[in-house]
Structure formats: C-alpha cells, structure tokens
Length: 397
Figure (cartoon, helix red, strand yellow):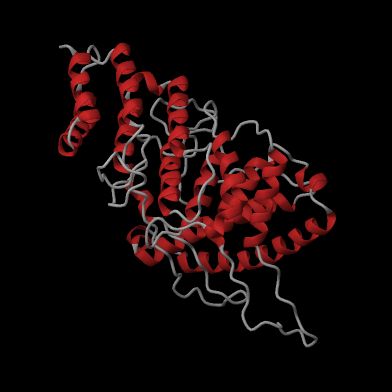
C-alpha cells in the first residue's frame, strides 16, 4: 500500500477541493487513520501527515481544527515529549498568542478558548504551559470583565479562569513572575469582598451581604497558589503592608462564610449513598462541597505565617487521581490533573456548573443552589472567524 500517495491525494482534496469534498476527506482521514496497521503508519508517514496538516491549519474552521488536533494527537511520533511540544507550538500559533486579544470580538474570544481547550491536555511536567499562562495573566485577566461571550449561556469569565487554573499546574520558569502574580492577586481581590461595615448597634449598614463567588475564587486561588510556589516570599516582601492587611481581612471574611456553607452541605449530604447521590440536587451539592473544600484548603495555606504552598487539591471539575503524583504518565495521559483519556476534551466539559450559594450572611438554609449551564466551545456554528477565501465554513481559525 502506498500510504503517502493515498494520503497525498486526500490532502490535495482537503486543500483544493470543494466544500463537500473537503468535508468528506477530513472525515475519512479522522475515522480511517487510526485503523491502519503499524507497518503502514511509519515515522515517515507520520511526518508527512504532520507536515500536510500544518498546511491545512492555515485556514480551518473550529470544527476542522478540533478534528485535526485529534488526528495529530493520535500519531505515534507525536505522543512523545518532543511530539507534544510540537503540538503545543502548533496550538500556540493558532491561538495567536503574539496578538492582542480583542475582548469585543466573540470570534476572537472563542478561538482563544477553543485553542486552549486543545492545549491543556498536552501539558505535563516536561511540556510547559508558561507561554499560555503568561498570555492569560498579561492580556486576558486585565480585560476579563469586558470579554464578549461567544455564545449565549456561556460564562466566559469563569471559562477563562478554569482554563488558567488548569494550565497553572504546568507553568515553568516565568520571566515576569512577580508582575503576573500581582495581576492574579489583584483579580483575586476583586472576587473576595470586604465584610460589610457595621453601624453602632452592631447591625450591618447594608441591606444585603456580599455574594461569595466560590467557583471563581476556587480558580483564582488555585492559580495564585500554583504560581506562588515559585515566589513564596511574594505575600511577605512584594505586597505592601496595607494591601496585605486588606487581603487578610477579605480572606478571613470569606473563610468564615465558607465554613458555614461547608457545614450546611455536609449536613445535607449526610447519610446519602448510591442512587440518592445521583439526583440532580445532590450532584450539585457534591460539586459545591468539592469547591468549598478546595478553597478551604488553599486559604489555610495562605493563613500560615509565612504563607505555605504545600497543599495539593484536585480542581472541583476534574476527576480525582488514583495514581501517585510521581508516577510516569502514559503516552495517552492528558496531564497529572486530568484523567488518562484521549487528549481531546470529552463532552463532560460541556456540563460544568457554577456554585452560587445563597447571598446573605451565613444563610441558614441551603435552598436551591442556582447553577449556570456551561456550553462548550465548538467550532463550525455558522459564524466565521475570518474566512476561507469566499467560502463560509462556519467558525474559521
């Protein structure tokens, strides 16, 4: 079988064929390639597929980009450390990390998020996320509140913070670490309210207590904790005394509210096992307990004098790892904080939920926790990212 000749014909159709021909060729490539025997899929063939795919990726829709990342991630040559680094570099180029993000353009925001989704499973202790984390800290966090959601029902701010948290675990040495820690610290302060002022009779001067946004704080605290390990004296020597005092007040207020919700959640879940934990209401409470427990652990670390960065938590939306931290990852492992599955995110990512506890000081009732449904960032939804010539293929990268 002349594999290169056959594949060359397919790539020619993808690059130069009509839309319907291109679509069928990509689908054929993505489904049939993995079925080819090893004696056909030689290093030379792998290299040819990678080279031709890079040509295609100059002009693709979001859906096509995801398919090609799936194809490339399955190639034996690209499952090594150097191979994964090549894929990360490819995603970096697609994401436009050399460009300034336009927060008002939903297509630009979508492209960045979609590319990050493909990059996250590729990171490891040997393949670092430094460039991506740096870009997020320098270019995305400062404009977080102005980002335009790429689709209705998506909390784009939380989406960004979740990605940053996942990437922060694999960040290597960073040139502007102190500057980026400051940006993270400032953003964390925005989501950690000061306690309401009390008037002379001890009553709150405000009618409504600040809302504790646990989902956002989990992401920001985790990211700060990960980067803080690289500069453990940040809160001691790099933050001025007044700002540090303000932070500790916010931290204490948040921690008090946190303890109340943790007790309420544990009480609500007490004695529930098996099917009773599978109801939607209890699933929500289980996730909420993970979020609040994570924040509790991280806050305790920061309360140490000096602050400690030794605790390890699993992000609330990630499956708990059963393998040891130092265990060698297999070629298909996505990361030390991800399940050993294919490197392309599964559909479960499309059903993340946000824990929003009831507002008011230490509410005595759990009530119904309002969650927001999170949609996935899928390509090819009928809105172009640029354009393939005069064609309209949907979201274009």
